[in-house]
Image (cartoon, rainbow, N blue to C red; front, top):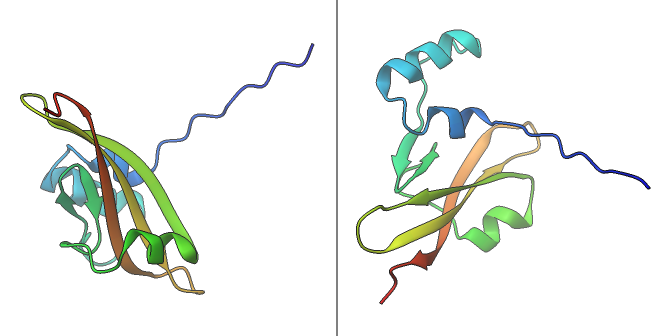
Length: 106
């Protein structure tokens, strides 16, 4: 029998989602950025462009990076799909989100 083990990866955005400005400064040093990190929160997505500037369908149609996060504790709880669109050089040129209510949606 073959067992498949999934590799868990943690993207920099997921790590930085709740860290704040000091975490962003630390990330700039860790990831070698010479300019301040530009990511900002939109719900629970830490996006380069806030508010999002492209549709989710457009974001995922080309080269992109996606992740998920959960937002809300009292009242409705939403699962966000977060996306950043990149050009051929790997530079982020757009951000997008979409969400689904997963709890207390009434």
